Length: 267
Image (cartoon, rainbow, N blue to C red; front, side, top):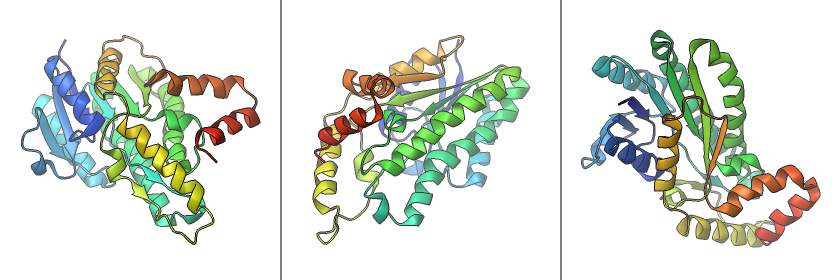
């Protein structure tokens, strides 16, 4: 059955792959972008939306409802990367990242809920990150913002059950997208006490993205969730070792797991 789907951050990367896949499967897809005119060749319609701007959120959601009379699925995908020693990341950049990765998704959810309650049905998929399951060195702010969204979903799900609205997380590992070029990097300064360790970690992070999995894996995963009557709370998508790292965190003593991460990042 064809569904009306809204995907935030649908102009590139994972969001674009999800949108194209769902479009090809016959769903009616609306993506969003801060500048949709820059993507005239999009396979599906792009609406103007900035997750930091509640007015633009409300207008984009209203456009979908006016056009189709319903909204079946929200894929909260828009997000931003951020790296750096926590001590050296400016406070305004930390707040900006949370505005995009945490508060933005909350506001989009709030905008779609009245329509989903009216329909007595709906599905909200929050795209989080495997990084949100652990505090990663020099990615601590990103881990925290995505981890916050993971936990928020657990609470939100229970509040929405009386309205027949489902919510779930899909956490990707490293995928071959342009996220590295768009994320905030704290400057790598030679006079910083973190210069050597941050530099090594930054190189490793970029290598992981460059050699990451095909984002079509995420598209297939989201398609599977949409076709699941009662979705699970958490889904993880990515390379085996990335998903297995979550299992290790659950079973290993904290300091042993910390040592594994430090060895991995050459700290």
